[in-house]
Length: 422
Image 1 (cartoon, rainbow, N blue to C red):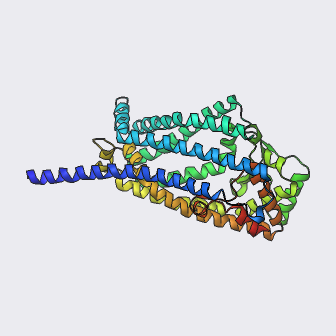
Image 2 (image 1 turned 90 degrees about the horizontal axis):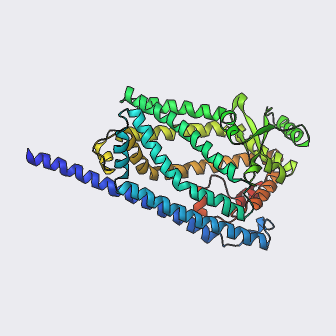
Image 3 (image 1 turned 120 degrees about the horizontal axis):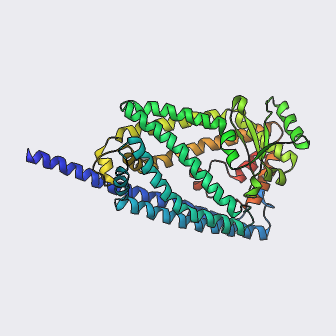
């Protein structure tokens, strides 16, 4: 009997030690992967600009673009190093176990335990991130003329985004933990369904509930641009009445446009910087691309893809939610929802990288289809022209490495899109 107990103890100890080192290896591998991707892009950025993209940068602007990429790359390396060191220190020194023991002295409610534990982790992450975000905004972006954010706006945004993020995360976590307590065997299916409903709600009401906390959205006034948009929309039988302009220029000079919502709640949102930088024809071309996304039902397909991957994630988490070995790897004596969740998230990160790769492949396919839609409806040249201007104004890298594009780019490169459109 003593031998059996000793063997069981030995197996459990081996499992704990193995998981401990597996997680450390995963954190280090993720760091090396990130650095390697940056190295590849750095190497590729020195290649000559393709002939099809000649004229986007003159020699002075190209030197500025190279410097901008180099500065951001160094910043990303430093950020990755610091975040990796902190993650390893918290995990390897029993930090999660320490936080767990502290919050258990405050409450024994499963919901409150999870919220307090995750809240502490979130605040640690936030404190580390703030200096980097501040430096990026007020040193790097300021240096290259992109920043329009005041210190007051920066810290107000930080406060509001923190509050919104904590509220939304608390709602989701509370909902999942309650379902786990009520139906431990099938909670993962119910939790997945609840999270999907929550996601659809945010998709529908994002512009009404979240965006106004940070930006003003005003209806696009009657005039040449609105007439051109409505004329094209009528030609392609795309019913739209909500066209808004967002005051993004109070933070940055970067330009963009997007659709939000679907069905009767769909809305076009134009950055005011986009209106300043592009001609009317180019803006209509950009919107033709966005309408292409809608016509091909890419938003619905994206939600369906997310539903499949999130269901798989819930299923996998369900397999380890009560695992003592998972909790022991973090230095805890007993399994709990929050401890097993945080360890699972570290184990899941390699899977997430692979899933993100496939998601990016699918996203690039959708971008091709949206570009093709604009091209078929006579707006290909305008889309290409608008993309050229936005790339130049953003000091974009025109020669990213093919491996980085394959793994991490949600859009085809500018060169690929211009060749296709023109």
